[in-house]
Image 1 (spheres, one colour):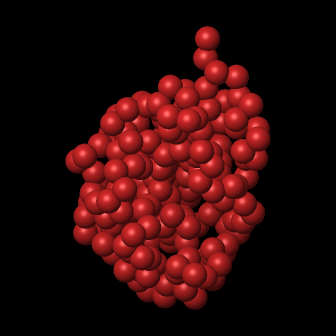
Image 2: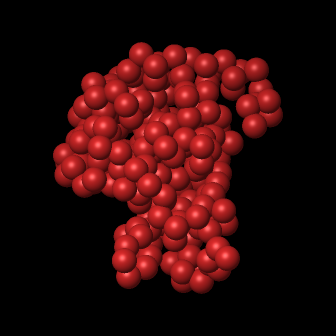
Length: 202
């Protein structure tokens, strides 16, 4: 996927990755290193995000789930096979080692694999895991252009990834797993009816 990018895009991504590794904030959505407490604190400060709201993360592949999830519910496996990469965020039991800032003390972590090539490339180059929160101050509409991002955040960002205007549209669908089955946390781009009718393994 990275091979499909132009030389300019690769250079832009390389600089973005350097910023992330140094604890900075990159605007593509708003990405930080989820294992860096100082970076997470800056993210919450920039977004004016309430501390009780957890932050979702992107992974490059299912192989990175053990860095975040204490276990993979069996109900999730057919959903991961069918909808990842794509706009489905699954809420896993979180590793106890994850920052309470990231999980908001919920004991869970929301994870997805993006279907956007630039997001996948950034995630892969950054080590496989980045935050995936929208580029907006809490309560405002998500920014869809570089100009809108700068209008909301000014010079609080460390790097603005040149991705062009985003499509906007519906957010990812959030789904949790429990003893009684799958639970819809947030309706989004994938209808819940389509999710619950996904054939189970076996």
